[in-house]
Length: 336
Image (cartoon, rainbow, N blue to C red):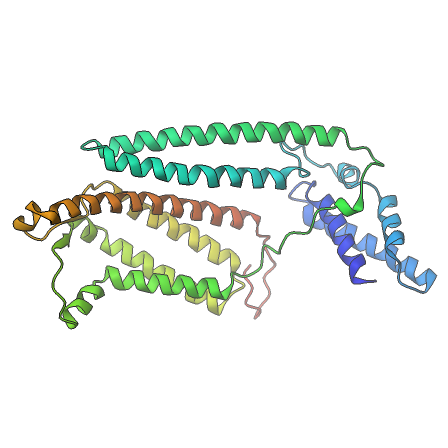
């Protein structure tokens, strides 16, 4: 069997597989793939040659349209059909990429103009942005529900093209790239150094003048939790480099650590003061104005970080739910 034939069969089986109930999906796909391979092998044995594209297409057409084959196995009903779901995902990403910069701009403007009621104004701005986002996502979802139903209703048994079969997605069990883990390690180590105050040690070593600002007590309140989470993240990345196929453990630990980091960030957000002038004299001059602006910038930065950490945690959970559980094999370095 040629490689092209294998790829075409894989695409055909995947088109059926994604329409099947999740619990039976893998077993049925393996059975279908074995049947199709056997039919191709038998045909090649009879003709004493590899089948060409037209002959492979004829076998798949005789087997049936993917939706009809899936229906014989009890395919579930979808709000948004698999035919249009990839386009729906792209549309949602476009909406989010448009709304995110707009939301950040609204938050920044509110933070700079709110005055005393900073936290209340920011919460009101975020609530307004959330309502706008949900409205736009709702409109997009309703449109694709309609498109999905229309495409499913107009698709007849003999009205399908093998060239339109979906591409098989990348293996969800693929390890996280080593470059990404090295990048995470570098960032985590630098963050740990900053939190432990090594920047202050370096400033004293080089004889630099002390800064006219000091960190507020809220940072000391969360230091133990923050340092513990950073050290755990470093250990996670090191284990990931040594055992790249422990995908489920990597994702699960990431979601847990993201949740812990989110709690630390939320604790920081409850404080409106993150830096202060080093002395009363500095507080009366330009340093006082700088401190006010710097506190606002830190607050906005913490909001952005919180949104990023929440998104990372949700993405890790989503991937964890979609990574198939592999059977445990001793001495393979593969998670159960």
